[in-house]
Length: 112
Image (cartoon, rainbow, N blue to C red):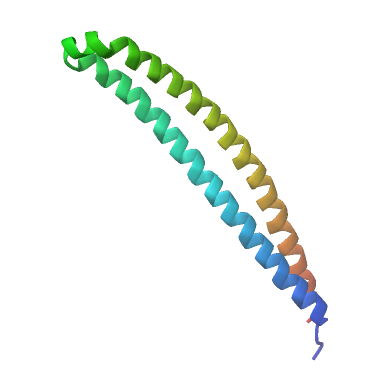
């Protein structure tokens, strides 16, 4: 029976932990992206709902509300772009971590 190097076993455990961390970061980035997309869609729905509302209230607060909606939409669009960039970076990090962990696991299996 061939025993593998304990350093390689430790490296395997460390790479598995790094893989789990990278995948957790990717999940968080996906959640942030989904939240931002949903908020942007909700903003569009609020804008459509505004047209159906009370005409007198719309006349009194319409322009202020429209300005707020436009500013919020711009802010959310910026957040969306940042969230997409973070998700792409996390996805690349996760791909590397998964590949590294798989390669090390294969080395450990060969050593056994």
